[in-house]
Length: 119
Image 1: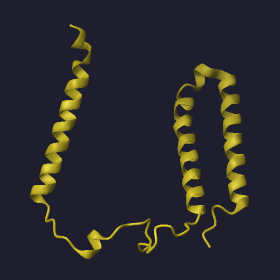
Image 2 (image 1 turned 90 degrees about the vertical axis):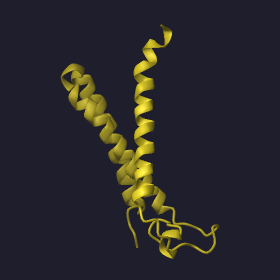
Image 3 (image 1 turned 135 degrees about the vertical axis):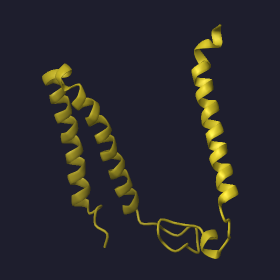
């Protein structure tokens, strides 16, 4: 009786596991699996593999990645805000205006610092 609430979750996990195993099995059965030096080489962000793992990496890559995450989260917050705008009224509009202002200031700061330049 206590586990009846968990039955849909257990069924969902079972179907997901079965589908995952089925797709992996199909990939193994139908795939060619021919090894080559290009397939076995490590892939590092579009660059040729480095000889030394301790080599310095440009920090601008991480700045652009963080910028992408920030604006991706902004979009994730804008959708529910837009849907519920009639319920939250002017307070919600002001809160989102402050939120967007903070993000714009951060974007201008990164732009002025040259984080978006790929010399």
